[in-house]
Image (cartoon, rainbow, N blue to C red; front, top):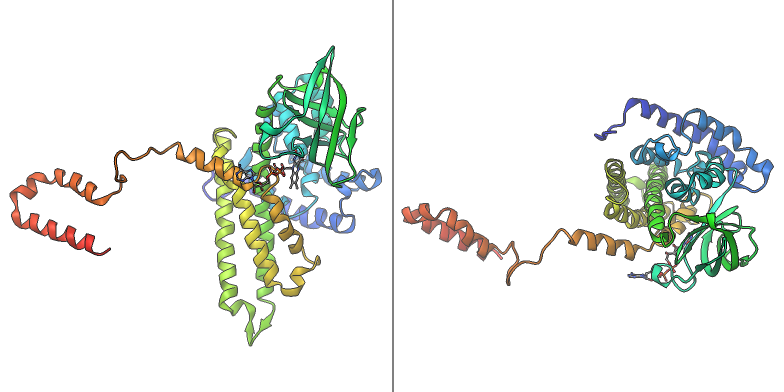
Length: 426
Ligand SMILES: Cc1cc2nc3c(=O)[nH]c(=O)nc-3n(C[C@H](O)[C@H](O)[C@H](O)COP(=O)(O)OP(=O)(O)OC[C@H]3O[C@@H](n4cnc5c(N)ncnc54)[C@H](O)[C@@H]3O)c2cc1C
């Protein structure tokens, strides 16, 4: 879809429906039954089923997946506009079939799975009949994959996995775990003998794989292809984080703007204090800069590929962490004491900002990617002076006017004087 800073009316109708649906159905469910939508308790989870059905009936289920991968094929730009709404509500991604880490795992399965693997895992994941986790980070190092040691050894018709993983989100609740080994990506049912889940951390699990035996068809994609699959998985995941962050910072902004108009201090409404106005103005600009960066990146993916857009995706990842940190802090601060409690979403949002700068790759690594890729478009200048060294440029330019300068002594004198006056200014 072409994007000219407006949304096509048909899709805007869908977005309006999503907005209303999230406010009137998803948020009340989350407030009264927090976490029910992804609970292991069948009765609690069933409360979300009618809502999921409504999403399916609107054709909005699992829309991160391209058509050839089994989804509706809306593309990343439409997904970004949708996530600007969903990201405001904790449970909405589950209700819409777009919750991490299942989304990234489904993308890998859709892109690299055999028909049998898709039948066994992809379709049940899409229908949320099963849940998954992703086991990549190891205790001795997360940012540098060359430090990973978990390895699979072929033994007859089986692979035997040995190693240790750290921070596998929802690993203890997952039905299947995607385990990144030094020699391939494997799908491991969580209840396989040898999968040992440590007591801590509670949510992002520390898991030992002690001689875990899986059949050969549990290798996903080619042998030794784990890094390629991981890139595929993380590329999409990172832009989805950024899309949901736009929703979060817009929520913080709404809370902040309402509050500054509602309270007084030192004889005037808080909104009339200039430093408060600065907080509003800076937040407004930063949110829109992030939003446009995310939408431009989504558009680029739609018009080329995740790979082509990798510099932009990396920029989105650390920029969303920064904007989340700045805007949620300002909003929390402007709420005063109330902001420091858990009686508004702000304290949790502010606390999540450091996480955003670490999960799916630390800021530094993404900044290195951006700098490295951007610098590929540049060359060192020949000789001592930069290309923009003005005396050298002026000398070159004078050649273009050589005949005029030679023919008119007055004009030549004027040019010399003007050049001297310009350079004396600094
Ligand atoms: C909420 C959350 C959920 C997560 N979920 C999962 C999951 O489901 N599965 C999974 O496998 N992992 C998961 N992770 C782990 C995450 O991917 C790692 O934390 C991340 O890759 C960083 O690895 P590390 O924690 O080992 O930090 P390290 O790699 O030890 O880095 C620590 C610090 O060292 C510095 N540093 C590192 N490398 C560089 C560099 N190249 N240049 C400059 N400075 C550098 C940075 O300051 C960095 O913050 C999750 C993390 C979080 C916070």
